Length: 333
Image (cartoon, rainbow, N blue to C red; front, top):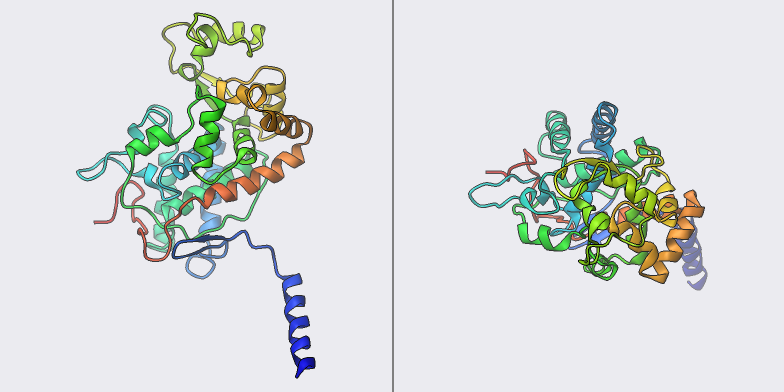
């Protein structure tokens, strides 16, 4: 009897040793796992990838926009596609919030993906999962790391304008405020610095960093942590008033390539947003991480992938909660 038990234990341990690492996230009502659509919609990931690739080829900036959309969704009520909902009689859209108004974009690309998936496998793939996949594919297409995306999220039937206004970190927030907003989502300082690295691609508007050029501390003086010749260069296209929507590369060195040059820019005091530069100047742990990522691209890629999976696991709807929307912009009637 004892011998048979020991044999069973040995076999069990052997199976565990060869089991693949599962980036699954335990959620209320079920698990997220990468193979969720393998039977119900086997071409789902392929369809998402091809449409994202087409959109980024047409406009390089779209990769950053799709990545940001997933981030802005997950920080409000979890990764539930609430950001995609248009206003209606029962819903005030998150698109109206300060972090999203005139800046959140990529909605038409998500619409195109959803339309293609509805033809392939009706009411099967959630809008929340589409955004998680599109964020991964945007990263890979621009030269960044890949990861298995845990799937099985469902879509919310509501939005939160106040949550969008209050929970998403702002470009002029203090380091402590940003870290607090991350911690409220179950993310830590490692996730904060790694995910900030997504600013290696994309653009920011003049209005999001103007105060650094002219009045950082309310005393009429520019930000002392911003390299002065770089600040002078920025002032030529970001005046004291006007030009709010003028776009600037978040990473001027390699603006369309996903790499670690963002962190090297911060070390040179050339982080565009205040929220970028405070990673170096306001906290010892984050400063050390900036230095590590600046010196080791592979290390940054590895942590970015882990942190994206962790962020994608923020309070998803699973099981019978939520729904699979037919249109990402509207709840099912």
